[in-house]
Structure formats: structure tokens, C-alpha cells
Amino acid sequence: MYVSGYGLEYLVGYDAYAQNCTIERQGGFINNELVCGTRSGDIGWLNGNSIVNQDLNDFTSFTNFNIEYDLDIWIQLQQVNINLWDVLVADENQNP
Image (cartoon, rainbow, N blue to C red):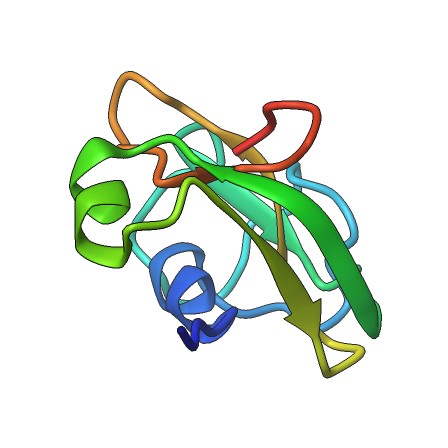
């Protein structure tokens, strides 16, 4: 399965230097209160992630999996309003 941090960038706008969720960004159309991420990713692995969405679980037949981050510029999700967004995967601490 391949995913990209660019999807979040299209929603919230672009700012290569934003390291928090309080800075207004250029472009985008979703407020930081609804979803926000920062370019604080790193190269490595995030192990023990749970698929918390039943449809994705049924489709993949997995209940958990490991994620490899292979670029050092990933936009990592910092906050998400779970009343608006469906969470598909949670890390080992149950963070979306």
C-alpha cells in the first residue's frame, strides 16, 4: 500500500517551514483545527499500526501492519478532528 504526505498538503496548504499547526499556509481550504500536519517526518519505520476502519480491514484482510517512511520530508499528522474525518489506521498508542 502506498500513501503520500502530499494529500494533506493539498488540504491545508503549503509551507515548507511550518513546524506547528498555528501558522496560516498558502493554498489549501481546510482549517488547521480540522486537520493539520507538519514537515517533521523522518526516515524509518513505524511498527505495530492497527487498522481501525472495518472496511479497510475487510479489504486488506490485515488487522495491523508496519509503515516505512522513506523520505525525510513527510508531513506527519499532528492533529485531526475525528468528528469530521474517518480514521483508517492508528499507531501503537492509538493515535490516528
